[in-house]
Image (cartoon, rainbow, N blue to C red; front, side, top):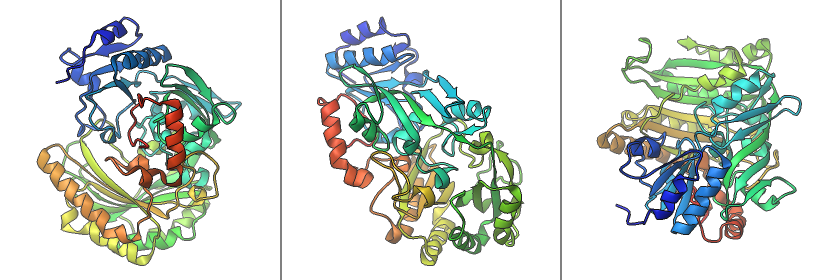
Length: 455
C-alpha cells in the first residue's frame, strides 16, 4: 500500500470539474479499470478529468506531491505503463467532444474521444477519418503511436494527417502546437508517443469518402495453406486503394456468436477496397475462385468499417504479441500457416497478417517521429486470458507464433500493437535520440508517464 501523504490530493478534489478517487473509496475499482482487463492498475489516485483545467490542476498537484501523471483514455494498451505506485492515473475518457469542420475537411477531438465518436459525424458530411479497425479505441492514444486502419495503404499513418495538437505541459502550461508553434514537440507527438506532454485535444484532416467495397471471405481452417498463399500472391499486384489482411480465427462456443460460427475455426481474408463495385468484384475473382464458405463482400458505408474486424465491443482480458515482417514471401507464408494451424496455437483466438506498403512505405508520407512503416506485413496473435492458466497458455502460444515467422522480421516494432514493455530503440529507431532531447526539454523532471517511454 502506498505511503504517500494525500493532503495535496485532497485539495485537488475541490478544484476539479471531474472526480478524484482514492484507494478504498467506493468507485475505486471502476475508476482505475482499463479496457485491457488483464492489467490490474494500482495508482496512487485516479482523476477522471472533464476539462483542460482538470488536467492542469492534476499536473500541479502531482508536482507538489512528488508524484507522476499517467494520461489514459480507454486503456486498451495499458500494460506498458508499468507499476503506478508513484503515479496519478489521469483518465480522460469523459472528455469526448468532437467538432467536424465540413468545409475545412477536418476534425477536432478531445482527449477521451474514441473512433466511434468521430466516424459517424464525419460520415454525415461525406468525410472519412483514418480510424483504426476497432471503434472503441481512443483516437489520441492510437494516433500518438502512428495509427493504421482500413484506409492505411491509401492514406498512410493517421499521425501524418494531424494538423495541430493541444497539450498541457509538465509545468501546467497550455499550448497549441503545430508545424509553426513548438514544432519539435509537434514532431514528437506524431508517432513518438505521449512522453513529452499531455494531449487535451487533437486536430486532423478528414477525407472525402462515403463508401468502400468491404467484407470477408472465409473458409474452414484446413484450407489455410491455399488461401493464405493465394492472398500473398493477390496483394503483390493490388493498388494502394486496397487494404487487406489474412487471418486464422478460432471461435469459442458462446451464446453471443451465431450457431454457424460457434466452436469452429476459419481462415479469413478481410479487405476494404476503394474502387467502384464492379472493379472490386473483378479484383476479388481470384480469391473467390477458391470458393469461400462465407462471403460478406458488399458496398459498405465508411461509418460501418469499424465492424469489419469484429473486435470485442466491451472490455476483455487478453494477451497479444506482434512482429513486423520485412518480407512477405512464400516461405514466410508457409511458416505463418504452419504456426497458426498447429494444435499448439489452439489458445489463440486470432492470428492475423496485415498487408502494409502503399502510402505506409518510407518516403510516401511526411509526418513526425514515425511517418512510415518499413515492412511488408504485420503479424498479430492474440487470445483471451480470463484466468492465470489461460494467460500462461495464450502467452506461450503467441510466443511460438511470433517465433515461427521471426526470421523474416523487421528490426523495428510498431507501438500501437505492442502490449508489453519494449526496448525504446526497437520502437523509435533513429527518432529516439531526438525524442529523448524533446522529453528532457519539455518535461525535465519526468513527471509525465507514458506507455512505451522514450528512456
